[in-house]
Length: 329
Image 1 (cartoon, rainbow, N blue to C red):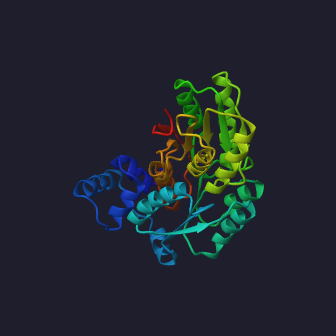
Image 2 (tube, one colour):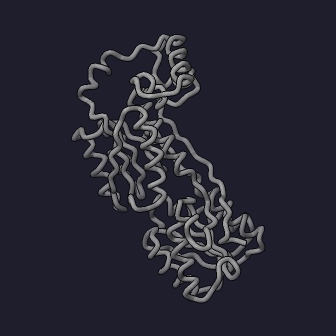
Image 3 (cartoon, rainbow, N blue to C red):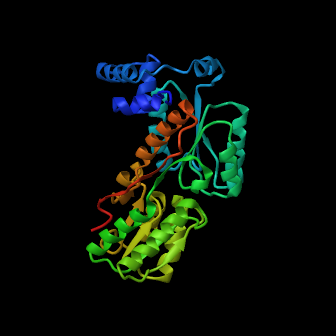
């Protein structure tokens, strides 16, 4: 019979692994939470692993979150969610930037052997065999917030970007828009590939011909302006779906420079549903890919993996929703 784990206590109590860790470490928690966790501990006969506890002095009680660009609003949202969960479990969060190059991602994962953190959540823009190998061989637990092949044998949490694009196109067609264009980031990235496929599939499902597809140099505001300039020289779309909110805001700025109104002349939809979407003018309709939910679940997966390294890896998909604002009719 297998020995009870903290993950099992969390399931029995109907709470998160972070909440169980919080109670067991004597950190502040509600009376109800403490009661539920203690009841589950008693029912399961959970006893902390003495060997693991003896090694605690060798732990850093730091966890690392690695993202491509800490300035991107979607990563800020994710970071806040991760920090909330891990701090409740008694860990500090260290945030670092990998940049867009897979070589730097690999170097960061291999650098975890230096022992400055007890685990890693990484959101890679690009994935290759070297990165998969480094994740598989990493000396500390790793959770990928993104899409890597199942053969990596690692916990993953990812968004359903293709479905998100489908929601965007469905909304635009329901408003009578037929000349829909797409502004993507680099097509060789994980999100770029998924969103390009999503757009192609959506066009096929609604029997539409693309009004133009532009791949930007990156996922930034400036790239959105440049992509918008190229797009409107080529064609006259009545709607544009963008691969993230920064690109969408850049496109809207370029539309204004052309004297075109949003949404009267051209409707615009972004992705990520970041704080920027509500703050720009007009407020941006955006696909919510569950950044906060992905951050929270990634942190919980990492804490569970630290507690029990023999767990079967989980692959979780967070489903999207559409936040409709004034940039679409």
